[in-house]
Image 1 (cartoon, rainbow over the protein chains, first blue to last red):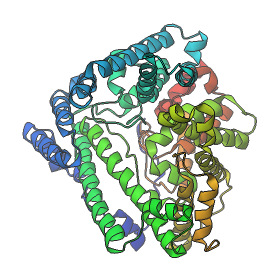
Image 2: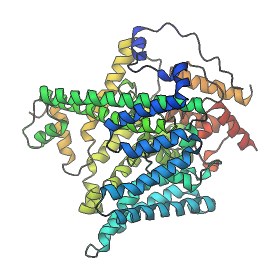
Image 3: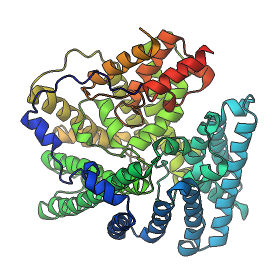
Image 4: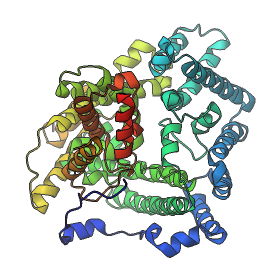
Length: 476
Length: 81
């Protein structure tokens, strides 16, 4: 039943580009039998933990609670999921007392949000045939949008005004985690809420995009035995080391580019363009390219660190960023650049459209679903993320001022759509035509699109086009 | 050709289109394991709808349902019942 297929034809000897691609700075220690065997012993576990915690000490300021959670999970792997919940709740309710000015108030808000999440989860499971049971995520997202509207129109001369906004912000911080729980409601091996809550802003640290997805995904990628745990933890250790190497490189890259070469940051170059005293076109290109590379480095460092912790906890999660600059299509880059954000858009926007509409025509179906995810979903996610603009400008003005990012999402969605639907002929052969040219074109597209990746509400889109024109020396 | 062999053949072709010539077992996780991406999941969904009449809007969709040969076979058996 589990016999390998005969798909593996004889692989020709690797050419030098292939050999170069296979070169690894950090060796694949998880494939060495002696190392994996050692990693299953108490000494080995202690050694891996010690190295990991040492690395974490330099990688994040919250290394102590994360390390304590990882130690507990490493030595009691059979209770991994409940320990995840305990560690997450301890961090969730402990952090306000260490970091926030009103810890009781903040803790109460968090408790209230988790209470609502529990109620929603229970309702979705208990009433599967009701409208809510069939469309819980739709109702959650609509309800949250309504909450924002209420907050905007709430009388600002009452002392409840700030509380309403605080609650809205807190609910927003948990929104997509709750959504993943609701997505898990139909799974035959669904977890209880006590385990679901462990995935709500887990102790290993997560931005508003859930790292790594929800309970359903964790169940699938959990290490099943000591051997899998050893391999997963070794991969986690390697990824943390890789994250630190990239951080080191990023530090010197920044010093070299912005210090030694004195290239202005993209923001500086853009502002100079706004002030009508633009830098020369070649300096604008340098700013744009170095800013783009800096973004890739930054997202890799953070993503790798979090996924490294996830792996140390015994979950063999995929990397968040995986060689984006080797992508040969626009869709591939999108998949490789920020994997868990892309997954969020796919899970909550792409599949609902793809599975329910335009079934008669595959191309229309894919196009509609892609526009829903990369276009609408992307714009919606970022619009509700930046609540400060909504509270400051109101609903309509904040939406109007958001037009630059809406344009960005529209172009991105159309490009991904075309990338997915384009009929592919035989791939060009040769290293230059088959690899260098497509990789360069994809990187150039995203680099130029980065000019419009702008969620602030300060400058109109004409300024962004002005900068774009400046790159081609069209507005001296 | 039985269901399982048809699924294997289809997944093998999908992997080969991506330049992935590595073998896979019936329980190999292809989507969650990272060898296939969301775009490929879409292809698998269309394949299952057209070939086996699976209607995901009725049963609900989760990538784990189509993650491996075993998972897809189990899904088809469930739908048939």
